[in-house]
Length: 245
Length: 92
Image (tube, rainbow over all chains, first blue to last red; front, side):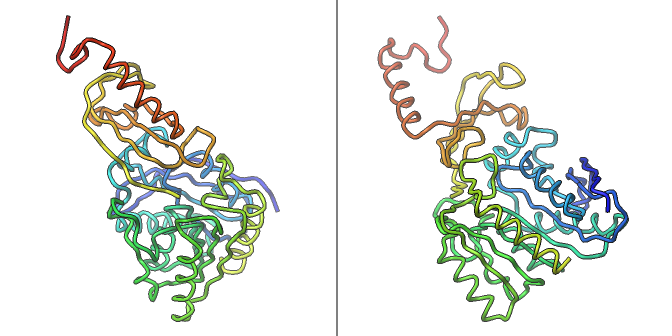
C-alpha cells in the first residue's frame, strides 16, 4: 500500500448550494476508503486543523474540512476570519449542518469512496459534530470537548450556542466523546449527563475523560496541549473510525 | 474554556494593519484563547474597520495584568495632557 497522499484547497457546495472553500486530503492509492469531515474549531480553518486533515489521509481516509467562515471572510487569514465571525455571533446551526452535508456529499463523490462518513470536531466543532450526527445520516462521530450540548451557556453568549440535548433521539451513529477532566466547558458533569441521556435512549457511545487535561488538549500549537491525552485520544479515534468507516 | 462573549464599542482612530494604515471604526474586547500568546487565555482586543473586510484588523492579545496596566496608562496619559487635546474632531 502506497503512503502517498494529495492535499489541496478545493471548492465544494455547502448550505444552500453556496460555493465554499474546503481543504481536502486523500491517499493516492485506489483502495476503497471512508470519508471524514473535519469541523474546525472556533479559531478557524487554521494550520493545525489542516494538519489533522492530512493525518486522516495518512491513515487511509479521504478527509475534508470546510471553511465555515468562507462566506464572511473569503481569502482572509484564519485569525482575521475567526475574529469577524466571532463578532457576528458565530455560525448558525442550520448553515453548519448544510455545510457538513455538502462536505459529506463531496467526499462520497470522490473515486474510491466506500460511502461511509465520519465527522469529527473540536471545541465549538465538538458541539457541531453532535449537531451534525443528530441532523444527518452519519456513520461515526467524534466529539472532542464540545460544550453547550447539554447546559445553557453563561449569560451574554450568542444564540448560536444553544443546548441541543433535545436532538439526542435523532443521533444517527455511534459517538466517541473525548474530554478533559479539568475542562469547565464542557465539565465532566455535563458530559456525564449527556452519557446518561444516550444510555437512556439506547444510543451507542463511548466517552473518555482524561485526567490532567483541560479544554483543547489536542491543540499542538497551544499551551493546552497534553501529550498523553492527545496520543491516547488519536489512538481511540483511529480505532473507532476503523470499526465504523 | 471558550467564552464567546465579546464587548464591542464604536471608536474613531487609525491603526496599522497588515495592509497598512487603516481607519478604525470598532473595537472588540474579549477574554478567550489567544492565537499567539503562549497561555490558555488572554484579553484580546481587535481594532477593526468592518467596511474594509476581515483583514482590516489590528489585533493584540494581552495578559490580564497587561490589559489593566494599559487601561491605567491610557487614563494617566490623557489626564496628564491638556483637557480635550486629543478629543474627536480637534485639529491644531
